[in-house]
Amino acid sequence: MADLLIDKALIDKVKKENGTVLTFDNLSDSVKEKLRDEHIIGIIDKHFMLDCAIKEIDLTDCVGITDATLVHIANKCKRLKHLFVSRCVNITEDGIQAIAEKIGKNLDSLYYSGCNRCTDAALQAVVQHCPNLVELWADDTGITQMPESIGNLPKLRELCLENNGIKAIPPSFTLLRHTLRDFRISGNPLQHPPPPLEVAQRSIKEKQHYVSRAANATCTAIFIACLCCCCPYFYCVEWCEMCCYPS
Image 1: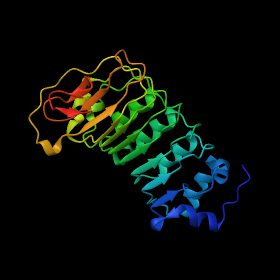
Image 2 (image 1 turned 45 degrees about the horizontal axis):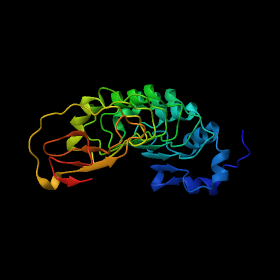
Image 3 (image 1 turned 180 degrees about the vertical axis):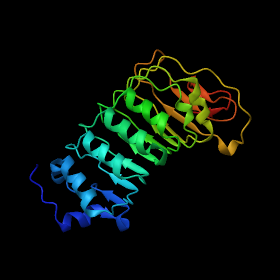
Image 4 (image 1 turned 30 degrees about the horizontal axis):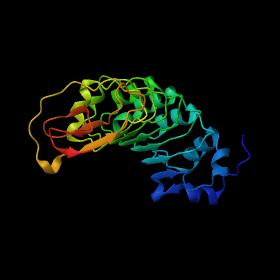
């Protein structure tokens, strides 16, 4: 076990909001580097109620934890709604799959950016088992394919898949046009946009445009995710001519 003292002072720093939040984000980098699975598991088991009421866990930059922590969270924290494990480089898609399959229906937010061992299988499990997700960040993970069923996340408002190996966006993505407000896809070798989908006219107040450059794309222009009235798909142009909105 890493040389780290789990004392009352540390517990007071990580246990927040009457035991509904467990966050290590306010610890120093040197302390977070020493955290291991046994520390996290021990804190959850010893310092939270048997009927675990934790709704949010933030393990961002806790580089020493592995899938063992995620499996324990999946088994113990049945009320969890927000999970942040970005840059926990030792977790794999097995850990994300455990979270998705066991408590995915409750999750509102899932961040695992920079976890480069959580690739396509992890994202597929998330899309399949987390229908209530509002925020999903999985950039810099090595994903090569966006699931065909990505449109089956009807509440999704934020989606970040930057700096992966995604070449195409499936047609079902356009089903997210009513909810998605922040879509980040830059740094992917996109080769073509999804086909158009006919939709009803929406009011000008609801129009949302998200612009990102597609690195190494076959076309060097800007891909515009125009999730609005008449063109809820990607245009390989400098602006959306149908809406006359500059990029």
